[in-house]
Image (cartoon, rainbow, N blue to C red; front, side, top):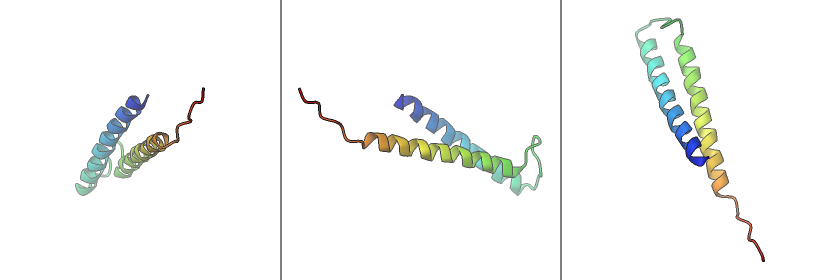
Length: 73
């Protein structure tokens, strides 16, 4: 399951970066809407993607640092 979350994090990071670059480009060329979506919408979507990546990476680090219980027999 860790590999799945790592893959999803990488994909969302890539999508977030593309969305961020697209928002800056659209804002620089002063087009108010591109495909009916304003630049602020791209920025908000990128922010949500980045928040998911941060939360996912923190949960993976926290899961890796949990102490292992010793089994006594």
